[in-house]
Length: 170
Image 1 (cartoon, rainbow, N blue to C red):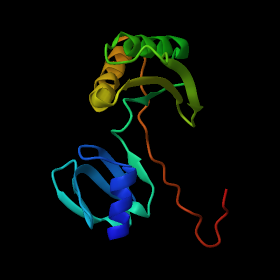
Image 2 (cartoon, rainbow, N blue to C red):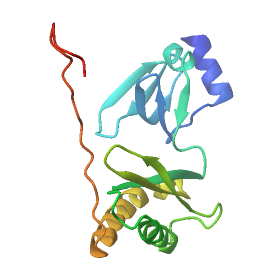
Image 3 (cartoon, one colour):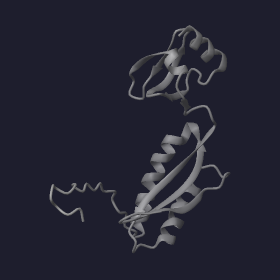
Image 4 (tube, rainbow, N blue to C red):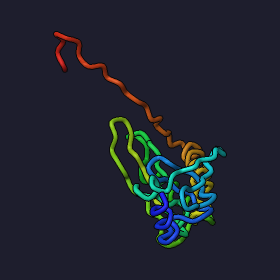
């Protein structure tokens, strides 16, 4: 733990105030000590993580970089106007003041699913605005698409029971 604490303090993969995830340990760093690091989870819980555990696992630092990308995706039916839906989504994203102009947002067909076409707009926002931008744009996209008469397809989970003994697998 001491050696790991020294390495964490010297190399600084995370700093006080940054949000991290390291091997299932996640939260905002409150204090980095010689033996352990204190974190506060998103729901306000206190976590004391041994430095050896943090040092021996990959660390995802959600706060370090100034901006982050996000993919805003929706599912529309095959009979809907795909080009119009992409244009609406891209317009919503480009009009938001928190969305960065460079790199420029891009709109594309991400996937052809079993019962829906998945459309995506990729954009960049400041890390400090990332969550709220994601939430606001998701809501705005749903409202705008529905207002234009473009129906969204709900994501459904299908479970297909395996064939019983003696039954045909078809």
